Image 1 (cartoon, rainbow, N blue to C red):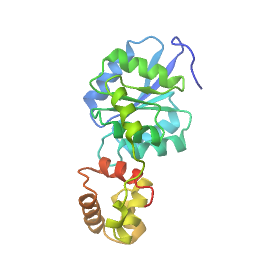
Image 2: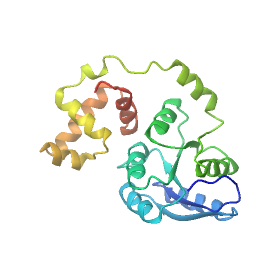
Image 3: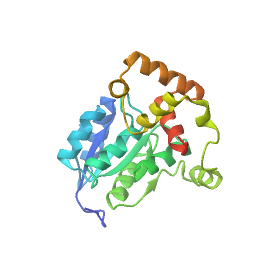
Image 4: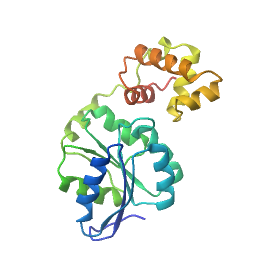
Length: 219
């Protein structure tokens, strides 16, 4: 259900691995008229199930979490609960992260350094089904989109056939244990492959790897 007025009741679900941050958001939003936090979770897999059951209007999602990160969670949440709009909240102001968040299915991107009023505004905009970008990165994001080349040429040629297979499964949201089971190899071997892939593609984290892979359309 979409909202076209600020006085409509909006239900919110919070996904972040930091309990203090979740509690802070919940306390802040509890004082906002017609806005209700109906659930919270610090684990990605559990969050998918809770969101499917509670069906919040807006899900606030942290981009960087252990296990399933925000970019991996977005398509899974949209598949099970398409009616919830997802608002990514992050400390990263990298325009490429913003691009990937929207590409995955988010309705908005908010910086953790933004004011509480800005977050509330973002929630109301997302609840209406409209897009929101933090003022702190909007101009850089526009520049990024104007200058974007489209693909990362030659990157996939650095990877072996097994590494490319792992990359395709990572983009589908497979974790280390799931990769091991599907590929009939040990979790330790999976971690070695992932380490090699990240080294070849110059990625320092799983989040950066997912972003890079999503850009490599020829994988």
